[in-house]
Length: 268
Image (tube, rainbow, N blue to C red; front, side):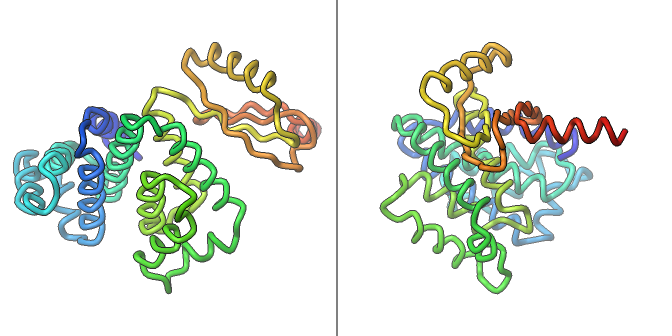
């Protein structure tokens, strides 16, 4: 995502985070529905991101299209979004989806279930990363989007919160050629960011105990000056030590990582 879109992304997420009340779930669903329509209609997507048109004209077009189709607050969010600058139509769709997810996570926070939803989204992201069969099913062009969403709904029925199911099924139906594990992982990051938290994705050979997790959380919180949520992945390939990923930072304290560094130094 280029600079223009990144700047607009921050503004849109602030608008999304301000959505509250009993209609938040409907607003989120409306924004996601609008994103899906804009993605499907190439000409519409091009017009809504045409820098040669005024922000007011793009906003009016969105209003004309979606008024009475989705909740008013969802229409307003879409209008404000299309009035901003976007580097591409794909960026516009991606950001509208992120806004929809953030509104859904806001509803989860209001209902005091955001911790659960965040954990369920993360666990599903790990499941996708580890299951070649599931990745094939979600990326198979022979399956329609609705079938992919239904697959997730069936997998999670009775096992995950409805908010988690709504978000994950929409992601599954709208991968658009993107890497499945990466997309689901990014959605988990959005849930953490809703509470101004950072997600620290840690890989270890053996699960950390409570004391180790508490110590590591305190160290990372102090280092990044922000609350940190640990998401743990057990990976036998770690061969001792721990690998930590936070945003674009990678802290590799594994034996395997040290061996790789040593080999690079010798080769260099």
